[in-house]
Image (cartoon, rainbow, N blue to C red; front, top):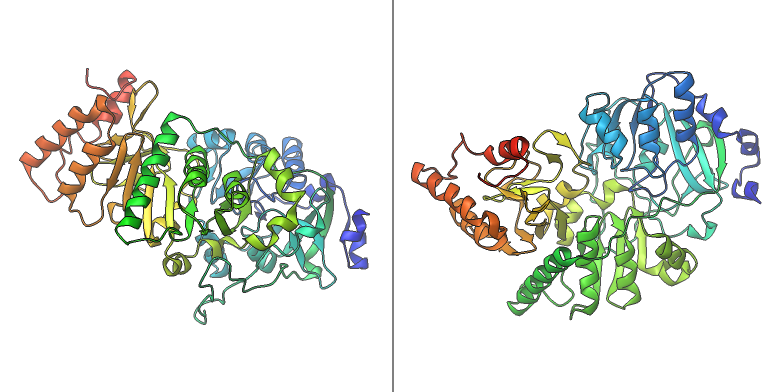
Length: 497
């Protein structure tokens, strides 16, 4: 039955074990792997490579779409098999190795990796490991639950190892829209004018001559960690929905809004879930990941269509979707991430982007990647692609955490991912600040008044007032700008003693 998924008879001889596939890697290789937010990733070959590296040390540069599931990044890092990693990760073990300097990490906008490979600004991929549902008679491959950078890896890698995952129904064919823009300087317009436009093919082209091994697997993606909305995320969602309602009343938006993009996690889940009981309808999505809330909105009749690069859902939602795939087939599409995240399309479609911040400052600069300016958390992901180009760029975070020892609004962010020029709306559980059309001094007053936790409002206002006495277009006290972070490190709190 498994071999029926390989429709080229001569490729049956390429079937090997994961351990045999792991022997094909050499020290110093650049490896590309499918996988985007734990979906459609390598479930056998890369873990086998980690096992091999324990006995036969080697290091690779690993490029993926985004994060891998099943602890694979951690296994590779723990085995010492990674020299460099890009463009995104969420694994705690790997994160610790990166922050210790044991693994080099390139934190990239998710739209850029494929572009850098096509433009030969990154080394050529030696081996690509791609999860597929089937190999077609023309050699093309059917992706599984993500596309990510797989189309680029298939086109540019010297060799390819395919993981044929029999846990994925072959009926998944048809939900993908594989389109690759031309290389510069002959790039044409990408002809997508609405999220539901399909412009490409259903499978990823692949030269069968590149295939050096085929490994069968039967394993589902790691389930998404879905946290129920809490008081803070519910409050954030209410502020955003109230803002949208006001924009409709002002005539800036219709009740269908504009296509939505939302980052992953409990805040995004709470915001999207909030639409179910709202007056908004006929919504669309042009995002990176289809989460549980996406399918909840479809089931509730609120969401008409959703475009992304992966499906990352809980175990319950996974069964709901793939046991009834025909129900959703005409309502979703998965695309390469250099299409789902391409700046021109984000600008053209007028995306409303909702992403998460670690902290922001009184002028609207956002840090979404580092704690205390030095330690990477996960990475910028696609938030930068959307923030700079969105119709509305919204960032959310809780006002304070750790028993209110940490304020997430500070005088100056300790690391800048999104400058004040790319941020329209800031939201915490205490309120919303609309920064559009405001000068720096105006932004500071609105942010302090609406977003800051009460424990820190007077402290932040005091900083701002004293900075204004010194003067400047963007007033700061440089000798105090990072004092909150320093105080946190020394005393365990950002509050003044």
